[in-house]
Structure formats: C-alpha cells, structure tokens
Figure 1 (spheres, rainbow, N blue to C red):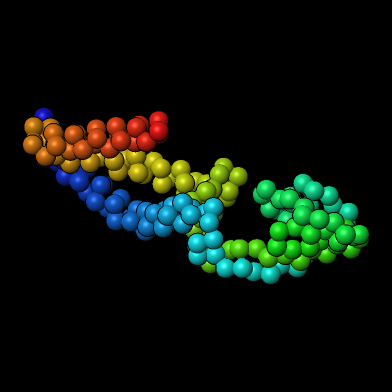
Figure 2 (figure 1 turned 90 degrees about the horizontal axis):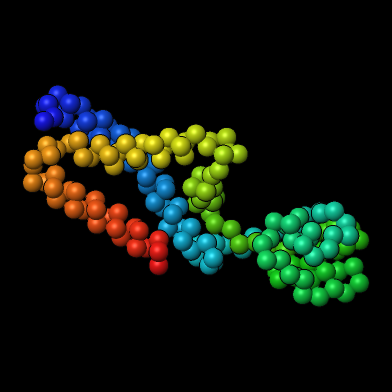
Length: 170
C-alpha cells in the first residue's frame, strides 16, 4: 500500500512537470501537425533565390548544392541549365530559382522537432523524452492501486498501447 506522502509527492512532481512541459508540448504538437503536411505546399510561400554556386556543376551535384531533393534537369541550352522552378548558368555558377518555405517561426519549430545528436540543443530533445516518460509513468502513482480509477486508467493505457502497436503494423 502506498503512503499518502509518496502519493502527494508524485502528484506534485506530475503537476509541476506538466505545467513546465505544456509549452514544449504545444511546440511539438504544432510542428508535428505542420510536418504531417511537409510533402504539400500548405502554409508555404514562394521565395526567389539568387545564388552563386560553383561553376560547371552537373545533375546530382547541382541538386545537392541547392539542397533540393529529387532534383532533375529539364533541359540544357548551351551553358544554361533549366530545372523545375529555375535556371543555372554553368559558366558563371549563377543560379536563380524559387523555393517554397514555411514562415520562419514554423520553420524553427520544425527544426527543433526533427533535431538530431549533431544539433547543439539535442539535450532538450533527450530531456523532453525522459520528462514525458516520467510524466506517463508517474500518472500511475497518483492513485491507489485499489481505487476504481486506477483500474480504469490501466484499461485506457493498455488501449493506447494496443492502438499504437496496431498502427505501427498497418
């Protein structure tokens, strides 16, 4: 049987961690929704880009220099290379093309959401994951195991786990 003091301690940690994580969860939720539509132009605006790249780039090297996935040359006329949304002059290295970008705030939120170990803020992602893990486990210490709400909570947790496993297999 769990004592009242330890039950209150978990409630306090859970409560204040929940308040603290509310802002981070909002950022991750919004960027997660935006990332769902990353293969569309939803909320993106066109920006004209004029850059000087290395001269004489070909095919994939040109695509990498402009950081464009699935890059494909449409046609070449002399030194001028035409591709979807722009041109590149092989002799001078001048590239002119359009990019579709999210508003800067959403772009920054997405970068935070997709961060990796090379990012200087990677510790934030690790802290967030550990805090969410604590948050989900500590919920089970907020009620006595003999309480009806505890058993109902176990059913809901099991249903959530099962739904996730089913969605992963589909």
